Image 1 (cartoon, rainbow, N blue to C red):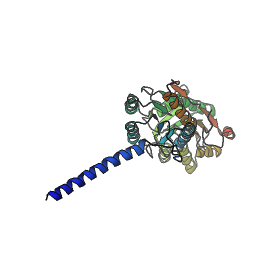
Image 2 (spheres, rainbow, N blue to C red):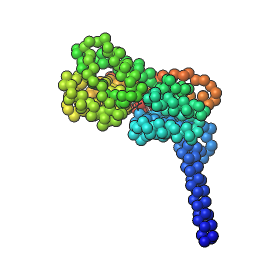
Image 3 (cartoon, rainbow, N blue to C red):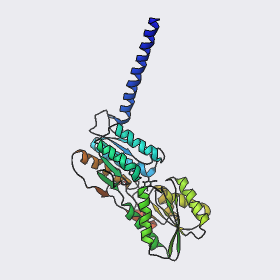
Length: 332
Ligand code: BGC
């Protein structure tokens, strides 16, 4: 009996120790890596940064990642790219929290909704982890720097483009990535302000795409059905213009479309005349500068708090000027 008890006690101890060792091991594997971005060279990196976008599998965010990786390789920094595979606010927040728990050396992410992101970003800063917001700012948080488009101005440019390119009365449908996302709100507000004094322009409705192509298709289709006089569209996130163009192509209808970003499909639709204008952003540059700026912070420097990357509107005639490399692949 005593032998059996000792055996059971010994087994329980072994199980407990194994579990503890595995938890520490996998925790470290997730957020304490050694090696370069590619993981090919086993050398100890100076720093370990994490880039957390709202959607990993998004062509726009892959460009941000490309830029960030290039800077990380150049400076011998370990960079991880983690987050929700498909846009999901809870997962985004959870990943940020995990990165804080993992005591990374620097956090690059967005500040999508003030109420939820600001306290979490402040928690990171309180724990000694500097935060650089990319693409979407959290101006009320303790983040050190914002690097990305001036989203209000970009929306304003889209509105001005519609005014310049259209004549006569216009009924506009807006498709936005997420109603509650601060950068999407700014893009809508900028647009509305640009057209507000033009009585010939009427915004019929604003619908959400949930930043997916399927969501944009659904929203565009509903807008066309609900407003038979719809003559123009404005899409405020990277996949919205593509969804709108697909619907117009399918329904064989014509409309003026101003979209966001210069993903290959968008440029293709511009070439075909289904998208008339698009707002250019520089995601590669955002990622590249993000990592370099984080390094400056780690070195005790105080970089400029708001660093806007460029933005402008391009049309079909500007397409030859677009480099064949992905959007913003050249760091200005
Ligand atoms: C925005 C990103 C967003 C992406 C979605 C871009 O225009 O800047 O924040 O995640 O669109 O496709």
